[in-house]
Length: 214
Image (cartoon, rainbow, N blue to C red):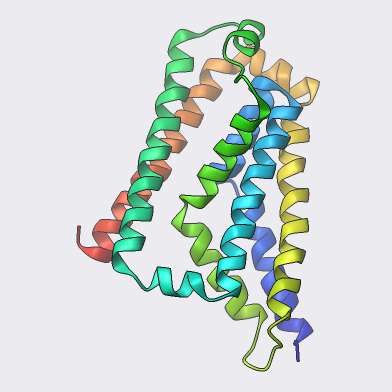
């Protein structure tokens, strides 16, 4: 039987973790401000699909097996760090090029919306914190007596809430006021994005050294 108090506690933890700025939120805001609302929403859909993947793997017990593997966690952190370093490099390069916002939208716009979706998916699938956050949410929300089907109720609830939060990021940062702000401060924003991507990547590498002695 599901305990509604613990279930909603897990939901609140998920909401706080999802709404708190991180690589996914930063990428959605960056895409929405630079390329428009559609780009931000597509990237958001990729992020939430990545989150659902980890949620389903947690539900069927695969994530527990993977997380217990030292080599898997090390590989995931290394791949995630490399990908974030790459995103940081691209953001810094945009700041150095300093193209006008309108020119940037036409010259750097990816060929299809699928690229934004895949970027969002990659960010979340290579983020080891996503795996650990699902462990935290499920361990708090579901007790030993909870039915097996309750994990998928939890995943569905979190997916809806996550899509709402990430979509809100895309809508807010694609507003005209946000575009006007970016037009005035695009170099600063690109540098900030690049620095945060780099810091997130470094945090993965530092955790490897602290946790695994690498």
